[in-house]
View 1 (cartoon, rainbow, N blue to C red):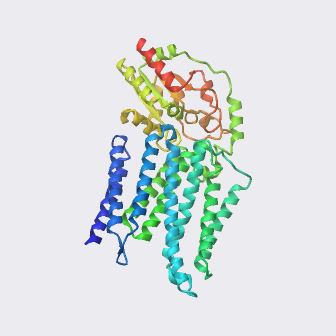
View 2: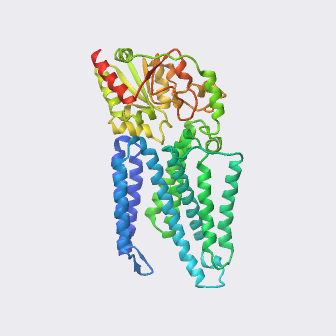
View 3: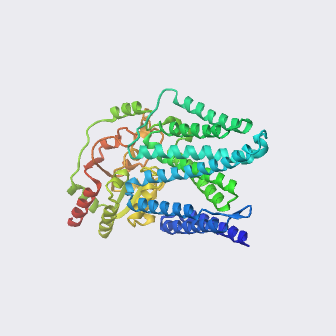
Length: 478
């Protein structure tokens, strides 16, 4: 009976995971979807703690279990409440890394149990103690989980500026050699009959750890949203391996959902950038092509013109349609609420107001959508890239707030540019383009932006929040 109740708990949890993921696809229901999935996870955890049995024995060491839950709950709650929206991408990377580490530790613990059985049966081949399928699952969980952990930590360091891009000649060859060593170590453990087999197993983790570091280090900042999504899928696959090992349906379902969603998101983001995943991982246009970026920037440099707040406010107040292109600069200034206020002021004057969202704007997938949802911007006003590009030609004013690479015409016009071929928001089709930046420094990809020197474009320098506050005041006065 207890087993049936536990199975029911896992079934409920699995259903809530699926429903929660579905609700996360729409900003209007995303918060509720998060709570639904969290409720399902709570049911699965409580059911496992009190109902799970193995060889007729229930779980024990409740002090350690609830102590860990309490500490983790407090740390997670405080971190989530204190994190700034600008730091959200690195927190996502950090938490994702913790998930990968947990999956790797689960594999290590299960291998230790098998290792003890082998120690108690001297001379028995290791392959007679554990099946190929079980061992492959353990090894896969350890390898993928470790790569996800170290890769996510490096990504976290890159996003907050603590870790710089690093590459050397032949690095991809070294990466492949390390990956081959991981596989060799995994096969060696299973095929050998040495007494102390835990040390070779640790070599699997060591080489996987090194590979995770080398895998992410050379990838440039402009590609980090894709890398975060890919690492997220790794963690999901590693968690699914744990679900196989424990025959835990909820863990298996959750891992598969995360792995599949992360993989699909990675593919969609690569498509949005008009690049293959291989090109993202090996091309590294944010890091390895700085020289090309410098050449492209040099050829596009020229004279730019500035616009005053009063003139910008006049243009927007008397426009029929205004579109905003949000970027990381908007997040840094935490100006999403002020931007929404400008939207309401202009709409009171009869101006149509919309937002153009690029799939890889910001530092993580969906960064701008989350940012604007926090400010209660209606979802229907957020236009995807294709739809926005169709409407720019009918737009009187486009206000670019801290975006750079996603509006750079060099992606279409300059074959020498590192971002050539990447689909962009074609803001230059509008009648007037106003770009808000702190300075003329290049964006995250480290290349100059041709847009800033075009006749239609005017620069409005300053902190995004302060500029938007002043714009609100000026528009009201018009």
